[in-house]
Amino acid sequence: MSIPNQASDQASPLPIHAEHVSALVRFFETLTRDNAAQVAAIYATDARFKDPFNEVQGLDAIQHLFAHMFNQVKNPRFKITAAVQQREQVFLTWDFFFRMPPFASSEQCIRGATHFHLAEDGRVIYHRDYWDAAEELYEKLPLVGLFMRGLKRFARQ
Image (cartoon, rainbow, N blue to C red; front, side, top):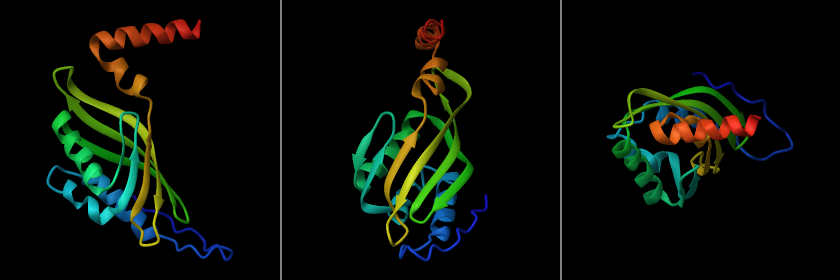
């Protein structure tokens, strides 16, 4: 995916990090158990990470989350579907594909988005994932899914 360059903002002294956005896209689209240790090249030492299940700070904690992902699901992979950048703010939308035995033998997909804030050196200092855990995960589980879909129907009435 190519990342368009943003026009320079004369009023802002903040650098444009198009090459760092491309590195982010590459990191997530090529993430494997073996290269997850490269978190230090992408994240600042005191970076913060938040998603629907976790809120951590620091490289070790973030690296642990990536390692944990590979222990929880099989064949996880990201496909970046769009990237928007404005100065040090980056927004990526993505599809996350995985298999999660014993609940689903077929490949599952979670669609979501991430807001990043980049430091002056281009590394991530803030990472916030947005995705609907109820629709994208819980509804796909056998018993929990039945309950969640029932709640959804009830809320629509």
